[in-house]
Image (tube, rainbow, N blue to C red; front, side, top):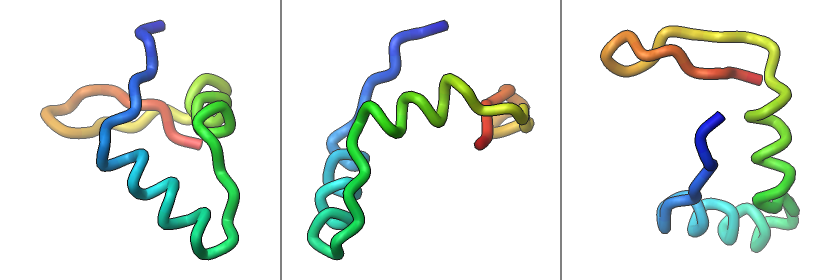
Length: 51
């Protein structure tokens, strides 16, 4: 599996959630992606894992 990298946009979203009292860190997001159990066709018909 490719390395999971977080964009600046993703990091800003995590900070916004934190300000609203929703604590979600990068490790949690990575686990959801790695252990997801559904595959969907995404942009340009690429497969992506969905929780």
